[in-house]
Length: 194
Image (cartoon, rainbow, N blue to C red; front, side, top):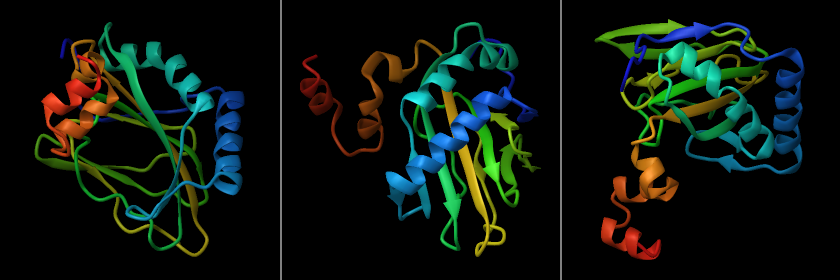
């Protein structure tokens, strides 16, 4: 990956106030009226036009801070954590996440993120509108126990980017099923008309 900045870092005050408030309202609307609950991770998930729009608007910032003139947006996901089942287990991303901006959109109580870099663990506590920047396909990330589970509410949006030669751009987002062993490459390509 050309010129990549691999050491995780926090980018403070990522979005203009209006954009942050727009994401907050969008997230809360989906949480209240279009729930999409992930029982495995104890969280609500959301995505859509507003998230995608912000994702694309952040591309130039991602290029500047990660040191890549060629990275492109791949996928994004909003998450809303609450109650005792909220969890982020240790792991690396298997999706197209060469470069990640993990944005704290809203929080009652901060929930630190831990990321491994060169054999050491770094813990980052984000303020609202801060983003943790890291390499999701290389660096394990996790969170310890969810703080104040009876009262806490935390919203994050993960914006992911990759280089143009990544499998995501060659085969599409569904290729993740091949990488996860759920379908053979031949079956996947046949289904795409390749």
